[in-house]
Image 1: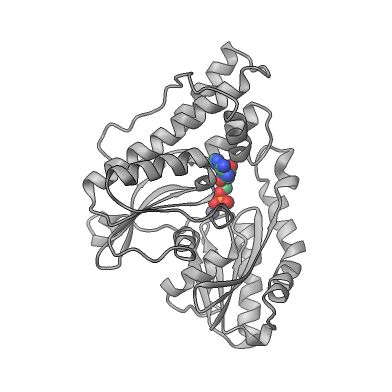
Image 2: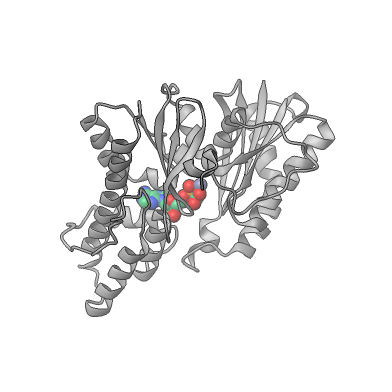
Length: 337
Ligand code: KG4
Ligand code: ZN
């Protein structure tokens, strides 16, 4: 069984061929970082235009690297949301056309479920229930996979996503886009001794908030303009505060929901300090901590193909992009929201 997975929800165009739901035959990722770098963030119109230009060659390369022809593909999987609508529609239209032409099933995949399935490409699926922290440029969500197989959002950011905060702070410091890897690199040279105040969610919920932390860095920079000497310390301090916030809420979630494992995924999961801190948390709770290798943490087609096993087949002609596609909260799922 060969699945072609296509991902164009943001600024990466990716296509992958996955065999039997697990074996990656190819996973081509075309990054637009260079295009958006000078703007300090993704410019949606530029992203979709570039996807349109590149999607054909990205898919062709994925097939070529996998050594298969389009006729051998048994099913198509594509990100249907959340994401930038202009970007999503390029991948969706492309996948729909292929599925229709080849008369094969098409699966519309939730991008966040895709990130979670990236974990299973490299690790055995843990027994239910498990807890996943999906942390990327657009999302920061705690997702709980319950014993009955249902998947619910139990906490999410109330404002900026963690990756977005990394990107915005990097922009303030003139480090370029994407900010996460640049801040992480700088932070290696500094000490995290500045105490940036951050919003602590005190209502007992499992939500996150990162905009206060970003503003604290902004105010600090107004009083103390950045210099070559101070940037590493600012990066290390900001990174530490972010990691602490993520670990703190994950720990709170573990106190409320039993879990057999902690999963960490999404672009920010590339961050070594976060990987280390989450592994430490898991050890303290005597749980395995499952994290994909960095290449599979960032947006990629293989995770979308892998997640198609969790989807109902969708009619190709009905499939539409949904920029706000969500994983329902527990209360919504139970009909008590
Ligand atoms: O999952 P992803 O590739 O795209 C989205 O779905 O958003 O995540 C991209 C985000 C960006 O905000 C980027 O700055 C962040 O992940 N990121 C990192 C690191 N590498 C990427 N954040 C912190 N540390 C990193 N090493
Ligand atoms: Zn993502």
